[in-house]
Amino acid sequence: MWRFFKAIIFLVILLAIGMVGYAYVGPWLFPADFAAPMQEVTRPVTLD
Image: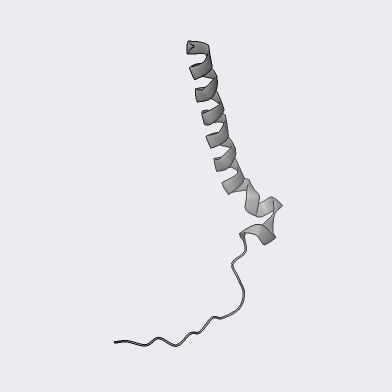
């Protein structure tokens, strides 16, 4: 049972490292995925 928990902990740590790596390297490899929308949005606001 302990081996199962160690494997799960190892996979969670590996997943966390992968997500942090994607956050840092992703904009260089996939710039369109990280780009903000380039159009202005205006909406009227009604205050009560």
